[in-house]
Length: 180
Image 1 (cartoon, rainbow, N blue to C red):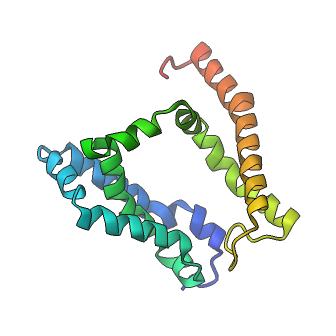
Image 2: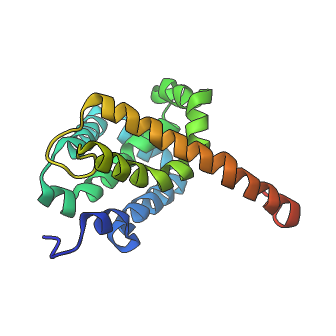
């Protein structure tokens, strides 16, 4: 199946994840189309979003190495298409949209790049320190180690965001681009 390619490479390499970028591009084109509202209506059908949600949840629970190294990320990308559509554009899902615009959620959004950069490092550190398998192990880590891992991820991300990203944005505004 992965023919000697590491799970970390399959997780991180652009060419192994390009389908997720493609799904987002396809969704953007469909929603910008003059009948884009029909896409939202289609996604509002329980026969669309319930299986998508269940498949997304299953993709996190299935521990098979074959599944993880082959179709897991494609399944996640495909199932996120209707769920993202509903969250962003459906009036029926307005409550979820309001919850996602609460200050703590907006803060997580601001930190998202740092979270992306440091989550793998923090989880690897936690695996080394605790012996629990956070990344691709057959068992789930102990709950107290999960809490410690989340704290470490947030701590490293916060340091990066406030110590590197924000100062760099200030320099960019001062010497270059005025956008954002």
